Image 1 (cartoon, rainbow, N blue to C red):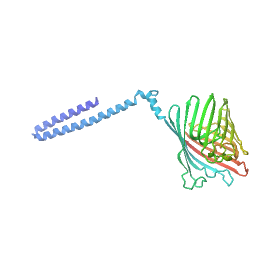
Image 2: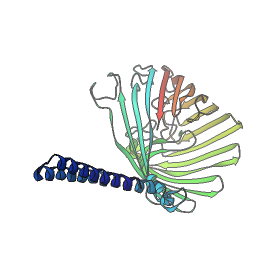
Image 3: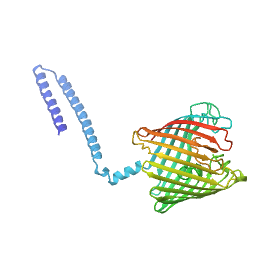
Image 4: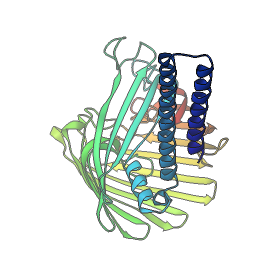
Length: 394
């Protein structure tokens, strides 16, 4: 309506101007050429106004079209259009964290300290890609940048450290009800504390929930690392076995593992391993965890870890915190290579760790701990570690 009114006003204005101009020219005896020029000017102005009006009409049509899309009931939550858009967005999920870490760790000729090796910036970057309702593809990339030059694992002071390539790729799925499958290269862990095994490996794992709260896993892995924490020349062996995890009662859970491995010319020192673990919550804020692992190595053939946790951090809750204490006794060949947690849990060591975690901001957690350890096989070297780190989760 406003556009039609504007057009009419322009037309009347032009007409009035034309009449006024004609009367003026008649009174002044203006010649015909001047009159024709004035009429042509009026017609040009009229065309200009019409062009502007046409642009305004197009803008209005575009605005009304966009408004209609926004108010389209097909995109309401729960509608088919909304669900299709939501499904497309959720097809790929990225997550991980950035870490800034500082270590003060003893190191000597026969010691078990890591020196300055773990003073670094680190990022874990992972993705989960939906294949179908039953299958997901995954990848993981790690980048570590040491900020001191005197780190023993670097080729030279200017080396690029771990460069963030995609180190691990695998698929996970549930092809049948109650049955899970993981296949590829990934980081695998056994038990509540990854004491029986905690490393990257190529392999396959099949799990089955046979009763409520009880799950069995059968696995076959080939470690990707040469010398593992407690298994020399680990890449020359394969590991296969069975793990059963479940709740005995609501507050008490257990994890049982039995595995065997190829013993390449007796380099691995063992070819069988067993583990028993318990986790108990006597009250809501306290969790007690114990792990005992043994192998059939001739000597130094068991590993133990006992842990108490008070409270737990919540990344969405600023100010949430947790306190923990751990006792470790990892003999030289006592497991299939536990997770050493960036050299804070080396093999052939026993001692204790006490630490705290605190959520500074949403998705930002600070952790600091202190540890004293001794080397088991010589009992002549000790390790004193102070570590502080901040993780930014995304």
